[in-house]
Amino acid sequence: MPHWGERVLAAGGAPVTTPRDAARDAARDELVKADYHRNDPSLQERVVDWITDRIDEALGALAGEGTTGTTGLVLFLVVAVLVGAALWWRLGAPRRAARSTLDVFGTVGPRTADQHRADAARHAAAGQWTEAVREQMRALVRGLEERTLLDTRPGRTADEAAAEAGRTLPEHAAALTAAARTFDDIAYGDRTADQASYQLLHDLDRTLERTRPVLVPAAGGAA
Image 1 (spheres, rainbow, N blue to C red):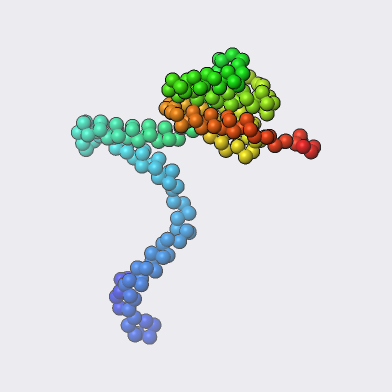
Image 2 (cartoon, rainbow, N blue to C red):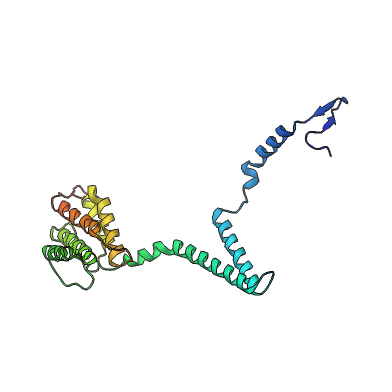
């Protein structure tokens, strides 16, 4: 079989030369067509295969196959860290979802919005930002309940309050969602509270007090 760039004989006996560069480019263009890659593994499958291969190598090394026990242990630990990081990345959202199922008021008894605001301001003055954020979010939700923009319902989460209030205060829906996420991450997660996070909730609370709601029509009826 002739190689690319070699002389071959045409049907009439005349020599024909196939340019090497042109042949290589034509072969590359042909091989990149989608038909040749329909059954290629996805990126996720390739990552899983790579991790599996590393685990197999680490286990083999621990068994003394081709390397020392110390090297095998190091490989195993590296793989364990990679697997742990992958699991953390994959399961981070469910963990936050679990936190966001907690009642925004917790075990706090019935209090008015102004009482929550006063407590938030007192905590803020003392630099107790986590407590200030908790009380300020509670003030915000209680204020919406007092204005009947939210029904008074025990067990409501910050996310639920934000979603419900966002329907009657649509121009502030995004800010309400951001406030609920800030509250969840600080009150039930591992985010450190600071003055900026408190100020975010404080300013939103004051803005909502001055905002008129949008009437939401009942199902099948007019507003």
